[in-house]
Length: 189
Length: 189
DNA sequence: AAACAAAACTAACGATTGTTAGTTACATTT
DNA sequence: AAATGTAACTAACAATCGTTAGTTTTGTTT
Image (cartoon, rainbow over all chains, first blue to last red; front, side, top):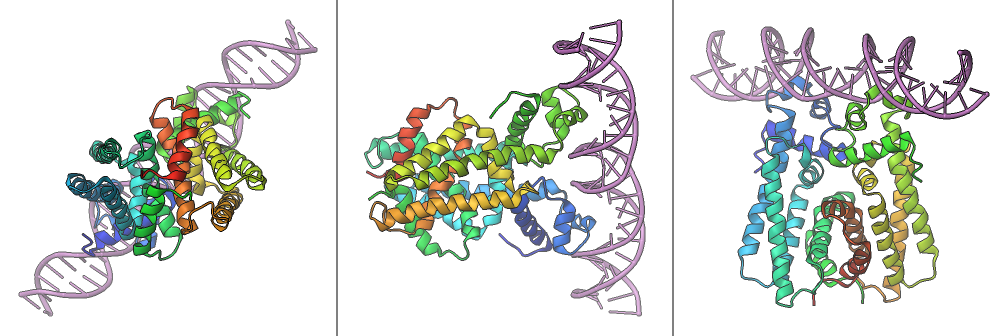
């Protein structure tokens, strides 16, 4: 995915800046400064500021979409599927926390790709919901409002990037053990 | 708190717009348009765009700070304290979801009040942490990494505003019953 | 050494930004 | 009727925005 071209470097630098202040607050001159070039030089590699945002977000969204499809189609228990979803979020967070920040906070600034993004997001949520509903139906999951459960899990998973970057090198293995425990089994003894 | 002055109306309108696209993407002309006046007229009531953001965020942050202080000083069980924290977030979300969006997404655009805000946020997290640690020490809470528990609870509570505005009128009472269940007792049968 | 491609540069553009200055309209109080 | 305070207006500003055009530098391939 990362071809280490000049364009990829610009996109990586931009994603990092977007994470700190958001897409709208970052100027092309900010990105250029961090690259140690002039703003106009960016345009030898990218077409527009918009293209940078689109590239960052859509790439990640497609990753989620593809992996979720695999999980939802598998013949595992609900518990195992939920574990895989949690692991999926942990993996992408570790691999590309900056891009996740843009996906979470700046998706509304997509233009041409906005509808496409929303469609992927809705499909993701629907797949997640159907996994939960199956679990409730067969007794694996507690019979409570599935929307509250869905929201509660998703909001933690989606903002994992915030916590992961704040703390230093959190061990992925430990995270994959502890997160499902906390999220699925609760914290009360 | 809401005195229904012209200034308060501007701040409420601004908060709503900030929620949709973020502080940086919203112009004074956007705010003026929604007020059905000209941008320059806003300055009869407010001093600057910055002042609007500061007012929105600091007011809410101080509310959280004060209530958390009461909770942490009370002589209740850990479970009861956690319930009160959850209820606190639900109450503020219902009362002022727009302001919560600004607090979550645009706090980094505070300038003169940035240090003050960060201090309040850190104190809030420390109080939360100490409640969890007490619970782990006396066996009320499962002996797992408290940082993961803290992050997991906080991220759900902080983004409640997203979910609350998407769904229509969610019943506060039902939410106060279901959220603690889901967050504290888990979802696995 | 000549040729070529990649990537930087300077200079500038039209549009938009937050904000100020000065003025006018309107309603309430003297 | 005069005075006052509130809240709107028009017009404009200096700064900054994303972006384009044209040129020069740099490093590699012939």
